[in-house]
Image 1 (cartoon, rainbow, N blue to C red):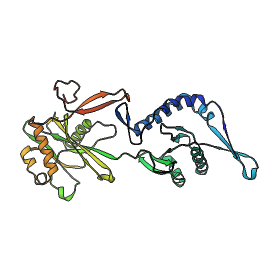
Image 2: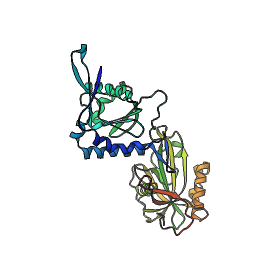
Image 3: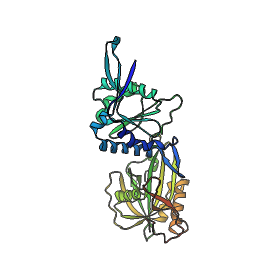
Image 4: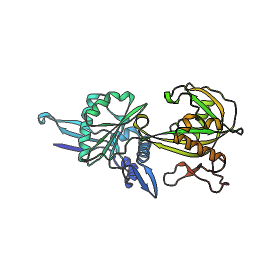
Length: 350
């Protein structure tokens, strides 16, 4: 026999989250008002909103609003309290467990997690999200034993998920791409800024290449290109435009890879190599750079250089970055597009 008793106020917490329940999204890419939004964005917004609710309602009040479940004791000898884990609904009819209010004792956590999953199944819930910090790592094997799986990990936590309904899991998958940038910098003497890397494949030894690297979290593409050039060569530059990008699959850690080639204007000339991964850097005559065997023998490298040269000679125009504010999510973004009107004042490269 099971009794569910709701104690304390429930209206405050529920009403603060109810506005999220009126929007429904598809599994991976969501069309909302004509624009595509990622599921992660909506999930993250709700998570942050939950933190705001926790702050505004208060821990004590929220604890009073938790449902307590009373079950028959062994052989009907009495009742014992088994609570459902503190959590909140997401917009996909799922559950996001509050990792800040998990039981410290692993045995207690195992019992409450098992009961919570049973309760959420009866409630018709779908996906369950459980984020465990480094200091909660002893709870990971317990969650795995109860049927959770790894979703993704960051330096400070691991995210686990549990899909309740029968059939394939409809939760959004982990991030699928790395994003890299390369900076093509050419000076007024028709010299290209190039580097040699200390660590590379044997076939690429001796190759002079443009500075490249991965962009950082929350970093703009154009800012990443400028930063990478500065870090590898000491040269300050100004972003002009994205002239091409490459899309490849199953690269590092089986992830897909987006690589953006950016045209940059040099603002300084003196090279300073202060990067442990760079063997040397120099200004190299464009003709000499293009005639390198590894570039001539690789069709993609050769095409990229052809595009860069066409851009320098004003026979090709790439995509410049423009700051835009969307009313759909209220966020500022960079929209990259070809500028027809060269007097467009929103162009970052102008």
